[in-house]
Length: 216
Length: 286
Image 1 (spheres, rainbow over the protein chains, first blue to last red):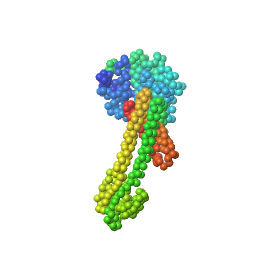
Image 2: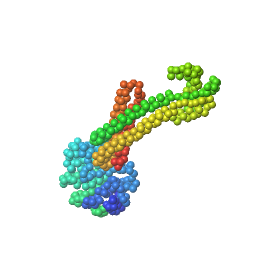
Image 3: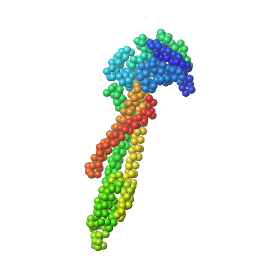
Image 4: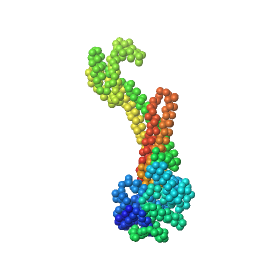
């Protein structure tokens, strides 16, 4: 499903990734573990096609970095969910609007939006807070809103970039449990983290990344 | 209307509110500049109207040889009608010329000279496309070559002055239009820049969730068009007020057609659209 073939990435003369080969199958839960600056975020951004390899190729289902057209990228992104350490939520909107935003932006009819948002909020356990503003939510809850937004378009893979980096132990456990639940339903997860302790408790495939090179 | 479009319109209006001060400044500037432009257009149109009216009344006087008999004068009239640029030809006999002289100067040449010294003549008016200094000169030259014509008299200098000043007015209009338009376009673009800068996070999230370029750009386009449109509406209202005010005091002075009054509004929409596209191209890399 996701295939990185001899991927190199450099920017402003700095080598970020060197000859990365990685394969993620449908339903996999892969943890990408490495220290800060190892290239984890770069790798996720390549999979999300925000950036493109300097050399090599990234293939995600039928989309390939060397052949995808600019017009196809928004369509592709609707099938690849992504969450971040800083949540990237809209503070001037409530929970419902933050999640619905992903559907508005893709032209889904109003009736379906309401139904889908309620459904996905129930999935992440936030139905009771659907009209709360971001400032009224804990970090863990905010990350669950971000997960709901990433899930609402039914992606086949969820990319998580240090998704628990800003959370306390309890919230981290909640988010990880939620990711496991999502994964059990068939969505592949690619979780990037610097914390080896975090992944030690998860029965997942662990891929180590160090100075731009990956190893399993 | 799809959610997509509702969202775009809502964001367009919200954008105006978010960059409130900049929007207000842009709308005011657009309103002032388009008002000035609108008033200038009304005045120019009316100046042109007066000039055209004046030109249409100006005629060439073609004096004939005193020796021509009536058959020869008739043939000459036929030839004059065929000259390119000639619109109307009116014959003025020696007797008619004498009466006209008496009317205009209050004296009788017969008393002074004992005979009528005035030759027969034709009064010629030119077609509209020949009502310029060069046009009338061409017609005069062609008529002078005709046998039996003694002299062609016209107010060439006056035509030259009228032409020159009406050209200056038109040129000023064109320059003013360009300057006003360009500055208003840049203003709208700059206001959008402020909105876009304050919205970078939202834009990034839009990209993240798979919004198309068109969806991301549309609210900003709407915002630009709204700024131009509101400014233009104010401009049109003021121009309408100006025209009505003048009309109340001097009913015959101005003639205005609706497009002229609506021109600030239409230009406002156009420059709002262009300004937004410029702003998006310069500041939004999606």
